[in-house]
Length: 506
Picture (cartoon, helix red, strand yellow):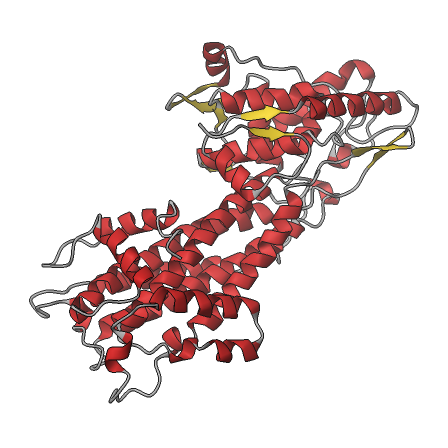
């Protein structure tokens, strides 16, 4: 079993978020628990002063002017959770919800939210017991935190709502009783602390980044496989070309594609007397396009690595030389995540788009020197080969192009105008995961076609790494001897990309 993930106040990594989403055990460091309780005590001292403190002894949003008496503070926190659980549409995947719970617990563990360690321990206990809240996917506008999704998560800690547990959807109270997992009663500030963060956006983006890294590695191998599958040249991969462009991602992409082609006997077989002067852009400019996408994802990773060490609650509790300050701010605003998520979707549209163009070229029959038949159909006319696999890639690319439209540039005011500029980052995150799903399948189609194209150049072989990737594909998918449904094969390769089967090769 893997080592537990210990929440000690330090930043999580995207890999830890992925492990958490897959079921790794979570623990709260005692030092973090002690710090949470110390900061909680300090906040309560501040709350006993005469002045109002937002969300501790006042109402929320446009009700911030309403002072709440001490004997109603518990009801105030329960009410915000229940009233804000207003989401709709299909539930979020369990892995995203699990990751969201852990990201939330890690943020609380940093102490600045003023919640008891009991709250973080309750989140962790539910994760470890496999009690995963059913969280509708639509409802967050990405500012004031991911309010509705986090409210659906938080109400489970109160024994309310529905959960996915033991392979079925059931009432939270039933799962808690069956697993001897206690519900809790929220005290001052704690309902707000659970709801008022970017934890859905952050968790989703972290999982996206892990998947996108795998996709990029697979896309580099698929590009190399296409180069030999279509008997293209590797001249455009010469490092000198990319050095003078001075773009880091481009240089790295060219280097990795070159590595994949090392040992190819196909490349030298057509260096002489080849009538083609230059290959299409989808081959020749692959390092420029993939490199730009890699640079965009590097930008996104930087933003999310910062966020995975953040506290995104409001108000926040600080100790200044023994004096406690409770400060209202806007750390819950999702724009630092929404813009990178929007940018990443543009990047994936291009990763998939240039892949689809290589697939189209291979199947088109336009290049008579490539040595492969139209649509990779051995008996064209009687057979259609992979003709419509390219249609599927085109349909996916069209959806990717639509999904690439930025959500963050649109604003709808909420809460009677107090919350007048929202990030829509949760929409950005949801679209990012859909984009990743589609792009994986577009690259899978390229793999499917190019693994078949290499058959027509035997006994010549591609580079060592390309051949290893082809062996991975052929371990599950046989050559195209006669027409068959490509759909199961596309999905099988997509799952290879998603689960990292090509990672070690690249």
